[in-house]
Length: 254
Image (cartoon, rainbow, N blue to C red; front, side, top):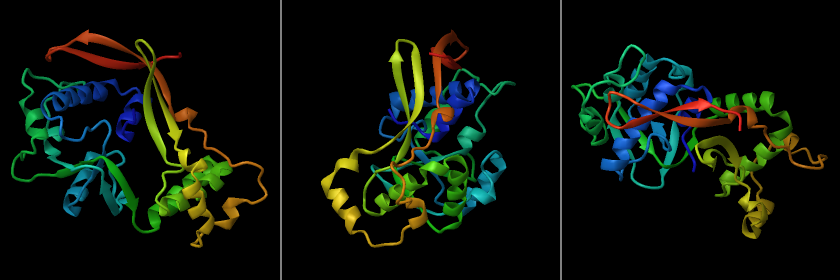
């Protein structure tokens, strides 16, 4: 199944404490608020610039240079929640959720306010288009350094998006190859590579294109090496002060 970049990052870096917390939050969502969008599969956005700026206090990648405008296309109604419930959640010295009550998690998923200064976050299933060129140029520079042989595939994927195709779309997927064992890997969507309708639209495309990256002399298209960003792991279970059993993911060579 596809998972969010947040979930993929937790698995890759073996952030077991945060993963345990998110699994509890997801358990409550799935059981009592199934109509909402999961934090483990959705994308996070701010619709209020002030809320986005407030998030800079969270640290990590939440910094002004990463702030960008996007056009969002939800595949179903978005989930709007006050992130303050997460920010001020009861945790122990190690950062694990504590306390016997999960009422705050229910308040979060029901969209209630925490205090009088909400920081609304919107969780979306669907797709988004980045506005402007600054962030796109930074992303291109990164891909140019990391996957120089795959720039032709990147350019075709960019054009495909303009033509309404998912060709080249890269997504993190979680699979279970054996009992108790899991694998996080990245896959590229190439279903339209043999779609006559899309190929006809691609042939007729007369918009801007990066001719240099298309490299007409190459025998084959290059593919990005996503293996370093994946992970194979097992799940162990233990009792906690919270209700039920909680899982901690650990790296494992399958």
